[in-house]
Image 1 (cartoon, rainbow, N blue to C red):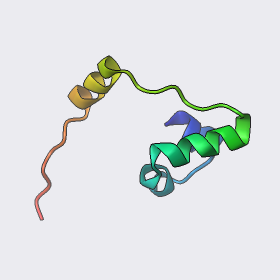
Image 2: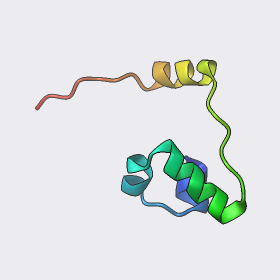
Image 3: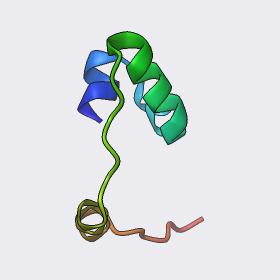
Image 4: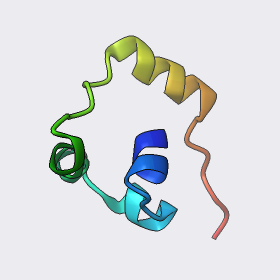
Amino acid sequence: MGFGLGILRLSPQVFWSMTPREFAAAARALHGIAPSPMDAAALAALRTRYPDIPHDP
């Protein structure tokens, strides 16, 4: 997220609408790198920290 918003200077709307494949392509284009894939433990930690909460319409 820091790379996308800080280094690539994407707006939050653009960042969150990108697919992982698009983000990786943007990273490679700028620095010749790609972000490493998230492992299961990191995903579980994010899901705990930011649970999906239904929004009222």
